[in-house]
Length: 156
Image 1 (tube, one colour):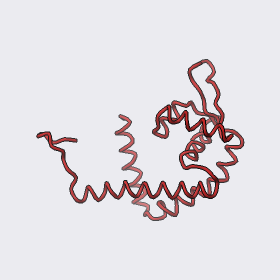
Image 2 (cartoon, one colour):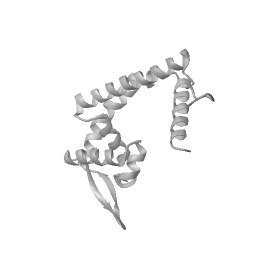
Image 3 (cartoon, one colour):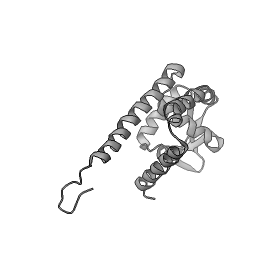
């Protein structure tokens, strides 16, 4: 965002502290959650997130374009990721009935087993490294802040 003179509105010390804490904290948290899943289940955090989304969907299937939107990714990146997951037997692709261009990602039985096995590890990591460090009020504020950011960036 620019000021009226065309110069950037630089972050003050407090704003920079918040920004840097978010950037580094998110990187460290994602790294730890990914390591936990990789070491114990040979599963990437990004793949775990797709398995969760599919498991929550009716029939364990989600249109690829919807899946990309849900996880804030590009269609091509999701297509590549689903391709890798398909090779591992976690998901399969299925054409959308009545829409030749549409494709569903579908959770396989093996994908469900992997998710069921990995979920306790992931939840423990989230609780130990984020949720358990926050008060109830801080959790509410965190949710409100990032819901506002998501809605803003998604144009809602």
